[in-house]
Amino acid sequence: MRPQADPMAPVTDSPPQTLAENRGARFSWSAAARLIRLHSQTGTWLLLLPTLWSLVLAARGVPALGLIVTFSAGSFLMRSAGVVLNDLADRSVDREVARTRTRPLASGELSFYHACGLAALLLGAALALVLTLNQLTLLLSPIAMVLAGLYPFAKRVVHVPQAILGIAFGWGTIMAWAASRGTIESPAWLLFGATICWAVGYDTIYALQDREDDRRIGVKSSALFFDRWTWLAVAAAFGGMLTFLVLAGLETGIGWIYYAALAIAAVLFAKQTVELAGSVSAARAFTLFHRHVWIGSGILAGMLAGFLWQ
Image 1 (cartoon, one colour):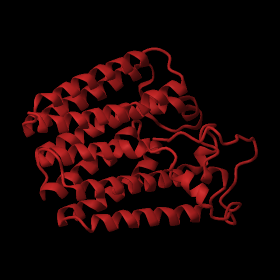
Image 2 (cartoon, helix red, strand yellow):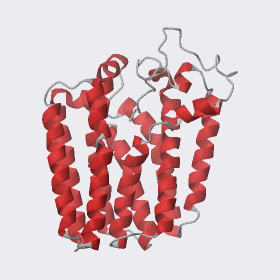
Image 3 (tube, one colour):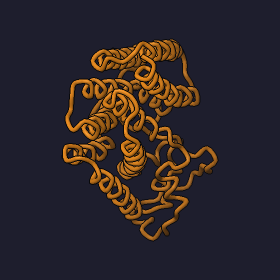
Image 4 (cartoon, helix red, strand yellow):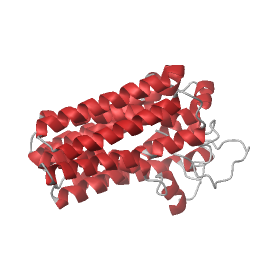
């Protein structure tokens, strides 16, 4: 996922900075904030929401406040570290894309070493949070670190790198379930599958913004791989997500309000896929992508209500 560049940032035609040229760049907190996308937390919400689904289903209702706080902070830290790692891997590619060429690493505003230091700081803080959880969650945490580092390189070799993003985001559901119950049960794996499908769907929509640039540069994405059948692939991904969520609900004995929330989500998904069957501008693709925060929040509300008012 390539978060939207700051629309107010100037776009210039000056030659791109090389690693050697930006070694002397001074560290800037403002640039660091833009590097971690502090101004846009859509990615954090899309990572956090499946984790909250897992906590709610594992608790059969309202989860412990401490776990909510820990996984909320952890989602922010891991998403922030993830976009830093993504920009480190893509700094040369980002210089070739109009939407991303003003990012702090691509433009040379921050150096490679600044970004590495910031990523280490964020990952270290995330590890400190995991140390407050049970042993099983601690044992699962290195996989989250590996997945965070793997995704930025997936687009070089995998035609649907969005699936790798989904696995990385979905691992939070496994860790949350383990932290809540001290074990991993089948509903956790169903949520994991739902998160993978959801990420493939919404990040394919996101990738429509860069389809032409990605084709020119040679970067792989599901929007290119599925081409004119993108709308059908997105529909299948959303259908898979809803199927996994229904099965998870049946296994946990949740009430009817949850299924009503899923029905509303299904209608919204259908409207998006119908629109994708036509011509969608980059700006419209970003709007459709952003709406998934609200869809995921609606599913979370349905989960809570499904247990509280059975």
